[in-house]
Length: 499
Image (cartoon, rainbow, N blue to C red; front, side, top):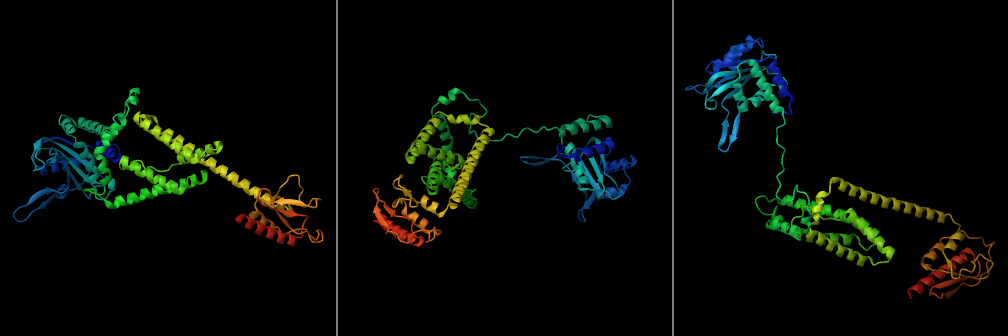
C-alpha cells in the first residue's frame, strides 16, 4: 500500500483509530483461542453483532484425507522478504481476514500476545495477530483484502513492531500507529540517479581555460572510448543472441524515408534559390556521401545527419553574395566548404565543443524562431512578387491592339517615328521574331479598310547591322495583308536564325 498516493490507506487507519479494538498481552496459546477471544472482544465492544461459531468456521478450512485432517486458515496475508537463497517469511505477525454476511461495516481487531507462539512452519514466533472482518458486498476499495493491505504495510516494518512491544496502554499503541503512518507518508525516496556511462568525464565541472590548450586530447579520449565498441555498432541487431532482423530492417527503412524527404524538400528550395546550381539530385548525392563518411568514422550515428533549414538559408545567402559581387557560385561555395572544414578541424583539436554545455534550451528556441522568421519572410516576398507580376500582366491585357503592337517592337533608331506617324517610311527592328510573330498574329482588331489605304508597297526585308533582319513598313497596312506579310517575315527570320 502506497501511503504517499493512496487516500484510502489513511481513511482505513482513521476508521480503526475511531473504534479501536486492541488486545494487549493476550495469554491464549493456540490460534483458535486467540481468534475466538478477538471475535468476542469485538462483540463486547459493541462494534458488531454476529455468531462467533459461524465466523470461526469461516476463518478455517479443513483439508486432508481419511487418515489425517489439517486445520488451515482460509485467507491470510503475511509479509515475505526475497533473498538470494529464496523467500523468507516475516513470522512475527499474521493477518487473518474473512467476509461476514451479518456485518454492515468493517471491523479490525489487533492482538499482541504475551509471548511468541509457534503456529506452524511459516509462523514459528507469532507475536501479533490482525483480524479483519468485512461485509461481502461492498466497494472494491473497501473490501477485506484492501483493508488488510493497509495494516500489512504498517506491520511489515520490523522497527515498528519492536516499538509496539514496549507500549503499555492502548493510547500509546494508537500513537505509534499514527507516527508510523506519518513516516510512510513522507517522501523518503532517494532521487533516481540515471546510470550513464562515463562518456563525459567533465560532467558537472566548470569550464577552465587550460582545457582548451590540451591539443587533441578530446579527440584522443573519444577514440579511446569508442574503438573497443566500434565493431559492435555495426553488428548489433544482426548477430548475437539479441539480434532482431525485423526491427533492424524497419529502422533502416524509417531512417531512409526520414532523411530522403527533407533532402527532396530542401533540395527543391536550393534549386530555386541557386537557380539550378544545387538541385535535388545534387542534394541527395551530397547527403548520401556525407552520411556514409560520417557513419564510417562515428559508427552507428546517434545524430542523424541530414539537410536542415539553416543550411538552406546559408546557401541562399551565398547565392546573393555571388550575385552582388559577380562571383562564380561553384568556386565560392567550394571555398566556403574548405574553410568550414578547416575551422571544424581546429575546433576539434582545441576542444571548442566544450562550449556546448553553456547552451540552454532557450538558445535552441531562439535559433528555431530565427529560421521560422526567415522562411516566413521569403514566403511573403514571393507572394508580393507574384501579385505584382499578375497586376502587370492584367495592365498589359487592357492596352489597345496598336499599343500592344508598339510594345512588341523596338525601333532601330530612337529618333525614327513609328508607322502611324506622318513619315512615309518607318523601320521596325524585331529583336525576338519567334515571339513577336505570334503576338502580332493574335491581334485581330485593326482599323477598317475604309480608314487605311488598300494599296501598299511591298514588304522589304533588310539585314540589320547587328545581324537580325528588320522590317520596313511604309504605312499602316490592311489587317489581313499585314498578317500575311508578317507571317512571311516570321518564317524568314526563323530560317535565318537556323542558318
